[in-house]
Length: 215
Image (tube, helix red, strand yellow):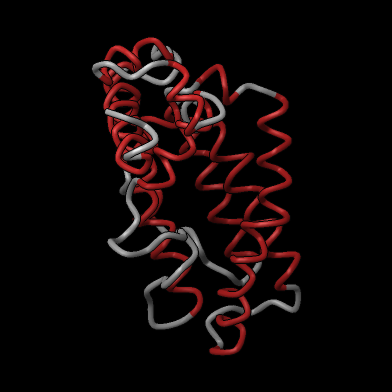
């Protein structure tokens, strides 16, 4: 396959092969050479023409998994009757995406990187929180969310869900994860924003069990 003649087709083929390998072998156990071997004739140079690194491939693979057809941004078109319901539904939709989290949590070495943790921290504040704030403000307007601090709540929610909880799901024991979730349930209820309910806790534990059973 000539990369110059069919660049998009080549890129898609790389992502498809990488996706399959990351899911079957795990990110840490997949090498660039494994991806090359699965491409049938393409070279390492072609891969690096389209992607900066194996981590870049991982980000592109996981960003595509679980999005509704035609949706290119995770923060687009959340469904629900009000702002609070939209946020809760999106959290539950995310937890249903077992394949995406299986691939993400297979990158155990990467997820321990101080550089990555710092990047996630900045992304939470500068990207995720700004998008989440839109739905919080919608909830304030429709009465489903009661807070005078939408910006601060969005930042807190993004950081606590992605860093304190998200990065540690695969490292925690089942009991530790359940305790964290119940604690967060109490915290959010105390803030008059009941984001975490019993169903969401069950879904998070089901995700944990699925990931552990694949190890």
